[in-house]
Length: 243
Image (cartoon, rainbow, N blue to C red; front, side, top):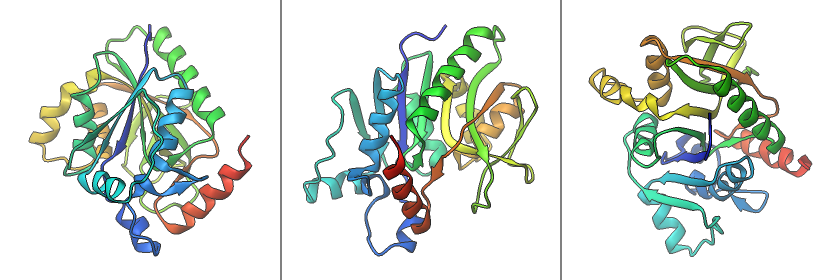
């Protein structure tokens, strides 16, 4: 049974693709959406969805730019910012593993813009899956969405009953959406991943499945992964339409 739910935000990347497609050289977590930094917005969204506390890993550049420009992030009191220059997204997730208590946590990439109603539904349905599943190898749930032609997606091969068979092996109709409801048991595979020389969160998640752990999928709608200027424009339009 899931009791206190922990929240986590993956926000230590440089966001090179977004920088290269916009004129503003601003770290992605500090880019404004709806008048609010993406990092602040994501933290509030996770808390509204049921997280009692949130930890976010940001890099030293983000911390410095926020400090030098006196950017008021207006972060919720229940969030803890950790400055860590990680080598890649997998190492950012593994850094979060050092900070969350054993149990279940909801994690999101800082650039995953998801309607609050869909985020809440994902959390509630994930809780039900976890409470109904007695399988010790059940590692958690990933949010997926229909592929709309985005570049560099992580394809998910999902069965009719929501079991993820594979991640990243060939094009499918579903892609991951940057939202995860996971057991801290996934961090048991940190050493294996590092020995294998893995360098991305997507490869770490694929490894978990290859090692026999179960990951399920829940389809969500209306999500936007902000990687380029066009995504940013679409996210801003979508936010204005959100209730």
